[in-house]
Length: 404
View 1 (cartoon, rainbow, N blue to C red):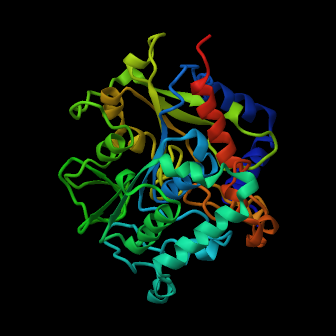
View 2: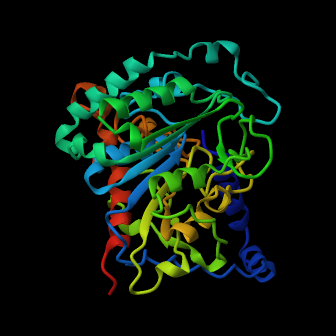
């Protein structure tokens, strides 16, 4: 059945073809077309300090942060994870992603945990023991050994983990499993910090006052807890007293073109552009700033339509509201915000590309089902050559390049 938009287009074209003067009149009365928007610029070569490159993420972005960290452990210094779980948690199965690594939840305001979802859907969620999920993560790294950096490189990383006890999407036990995984990977207890907030829902916690326990868009909650500041200061500790956060500069946040970092003809789910925050102090030729990569959660990509199909785009709510940019000023960090967009795999006749909420790939939607079927070979979406991991590594490398 043709889509509504296609039907309307055919009807309009048919009407215009009835008479030649109709087309001319419509053209004369139509408002002028908006000017074409220029392509965003390429990422600048900033000669950043390759010894201080870290990642963090919320929800699906938390899973992606772990995948990227494990895949490129030798070239990173640490990771912060908010409501995310262990490496390879979904084992290439969307069912496991939905019911083991997370749990379905109606996020419309006032809906509660059931809302339009029947109670049996959430009843299907399975909370596996943390030790079991951690052991599966270790097995995934072993099976992917030829496609990731040696896991022993994780031992020198700094790791910061956060979960809310009121989180109905990613249960605290899943984050417990991630902590257990890092312990198994011999991350030093002095370098591993675990934070639990008893009243926090599924969202990025910020220093502002607000409704911390809710789970609904835009998934940025005022909790009187500065999540971005806490994780960044843990991952990039100062030698002296802890600095005060700076004031974000409007001209420091710029879009950039993600297309040069993508593979031609390969589905990766990425948007055409992303965002980068470059503090003024990091623009100087002699600056040696660090780099932090932020992976947004589901329904938080810039192009995601909130509410109805034609609702308002999410835009820069996460990029500007999660709290990273003011600490970028204080800690001399460039912050990279790669972007994923929603995709309708059913419409493209490629069901494996179905990602309606614009999540990062932690179950295998960027690859055909056949590629994810044999978990004994390791989760392919969590390797260095996986479409999203490869693209983001290219972005990181671009920022590390020597200045021209």
